[in-house]
Length: 552
Ligand code: DHB
Image 1 (cartoon, rainbow, N blue to C red):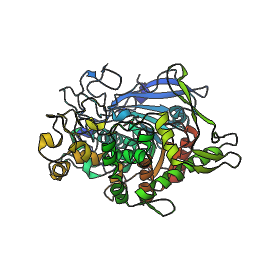
Image 2: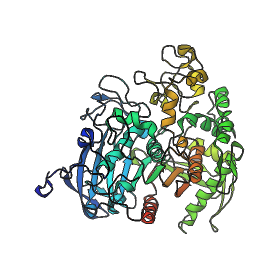
Image 3: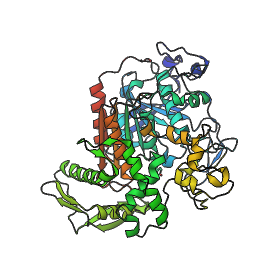
Image 4: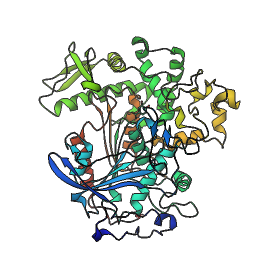
């Protein structure tokens, strides 16, 4: 529907930015919306819905049949369904150039994310439990972003979603918002990126790597906004804030971190989940050099090393439990010998299981933790949900494994289904003809990645926020809210702890709000009022954004 009063399409306008033909093709049309009405906290709210905006000039064509997570899906928008975004403007933000933009990424499972229906006419939200409802109620412009990633099948049968495609697409979407900032409600200087798990990882790399020139060739290839004829960037893609849950990130080191965590106190053995003990030990043995090499410090200034990591995790668990207790006087945590009663989501209300508390000694009257038994804590984590295999993240091709769904297919050339991206995976690949490993290349991982022509180590690098936080080549977001659950076994607790410590050490970062979320599994957006209060705080502190423009 196109109201007559808004019929004139706008031209993008960013002061100092030369609009070339490609950018002109990416102009936002303020009139091209559908009015819809939703209910938030029982009140009707009118929205302007800008549907499936293709945010690049040269999208990658997708095959109509996509394997996806839950079986094959037939998609309608083969032209740009993986590089589009839905924009929702609540009535309180009509004509408001200063409203924050709540930028939701998907990337669940690190899988390609087709444009989702997002918000539909008549939908009903509670702002206490729905981040979508809360963002709209707060008057934020909501942008729901699709992206290429692993699993995507191109129209030519190739795999065009390999790393760093997801990060490149997210940057392209940010650049679209910057190009069109004057024509769109909301401020591209107040983009808050929200994502969970694979999405938390995507939010983190987007937030960490702002304006880094390493992405320019990839951005040029998809016709992203603000890339000139010489392939140089003329627009910025840094963001204001990141709101990330359980980020599955630092993939190049995730296996090492995982095996270290679940072997250092014997968790795999104690829970009967150590089918590859020699591999687990070999992979875990690399953790100390990796962790110590990061050179990170804890908030009290003490070095964060492999030797201090267990104590660091323990302190984070204590802080998590005490924060939970102190937030509400009515809250208690089961005493030693009592049960943790955990309901996991599922059909018909899910399943409820009880686990005896043999690890956390809490004083509910004082809202304090007396002691944590780390051995039993990790056993609890690994019992309430089974551990991943060894290796956890780069398992395809290893010891003849051709079936695993781990992140191995996020890497390699688009002509290959997968490529090992860790030293262990590569050096233990024995699937002939898959292009990975000594058997196919005649090269060990060290020899292979020493070659300048190798792309797989670049792919790992370009989706790892740890490589960009603290780097002067990148403009890292100044504000970060990061959560991982105390029951999350999908990646090692060290991943989000390292992310937090690296952010805290980056002079570009002003506000880092990190915690393990008490008794949460691998999940996100469970703390909507708290997360939204933090966003409102950092937005308020920053003051009014400048007028739309390409700021220095
Ligand atoms: C997600 C979960 C994983 O265990 C993983 O390895 C990658 C992504 C997710 O939930 O998005």
